[in-house]
Length: 247
Image 1 (cartoon, rainbow, N blue to C red):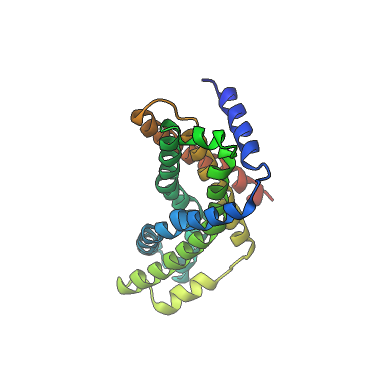
Image 2 (image 1 turned 90 degrees about the vertical axis):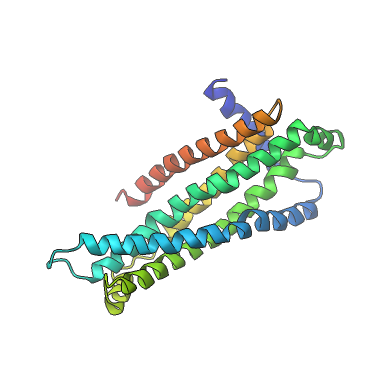
């Protein structure tokens, strides 16, 4: 199947997803359920990865800044910039694409091959909206909180491990994470997060919704969802970086 066929089916599916629901109260219950399923369940892996990556970035920065001409507060500055601009919004989103995206694709794909989606259509329910819209809405709501937590834990992990490893002093690190801070960079990071949340949920739902065959096809749809979501995250990350940093 060629690219234009996929694009056409994707946009038709998204039109159905955002069509006005008959009972919006049902969607609210689903959104709350998906916030727990997509976001809360992802907290442990995000916390562990963020803490250790913050420590790794800090120690590597301290090793790289061995020149006496480089001030030691540059370690905290580098850790902050790396975590806020790229690690938390992009790398964590790629991790979520693997965890959340594969789960969404396999869940909807299993419903398709067991004819549960066909049953919803027979009952007059907009299956695309009922199954996909709550996932997209939940991800857009909860992902910024997850990424904000990742940023905090990454910077804290860098502080704890950097000081423990004698890579820098407490004062130098704290001064570095405060130095030359530009608030618009947070706007850039969270804009990326919202775009990535939509990409992960919508692309994964698309591959799950159009799964046909048996259990083997569900696995293939899950793999395609992760691969294409990851590629689109990197592609749109490049576009947004050019938009925000081209001055």
